[in-house]
Image (cartoon, rainbow, N blue to C red; front, side):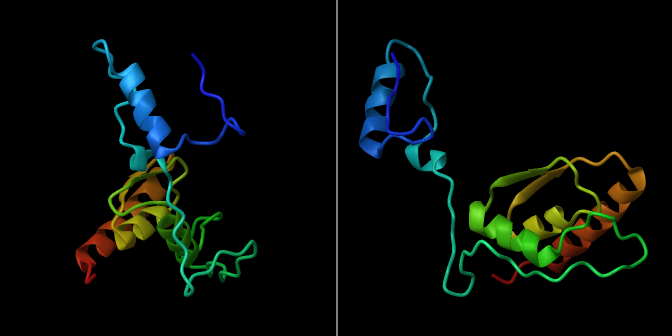
Length: 138
């Protein structure tokens, strides 16, 4: 059986997903275990942080230990808070000095980072630990 919609990328409605769960999870199968809302990726924008197709985040200034491709922390926070829920797990397979990890710590997300350079791993670890030591007020 196939699921057909206007687009191959479309999610079924909540009612149709419930029907699919009853169809595929019967007879001892557990194929559609996730809840419907877990399938939907949030995109949370507010009047304070509007969505636009042009972002103007200042670049990361040079400093000792700066990664050559380091992303602005404010930009990473914006991306993470707009596209994930609190408690979500974020993977950065090119972690560098850990800006994504710091943004995750600030936003209450879990983080897995992968980096080949041991020196950058140490910098990332120190930055993320310093952010976690700050604690969250809200």
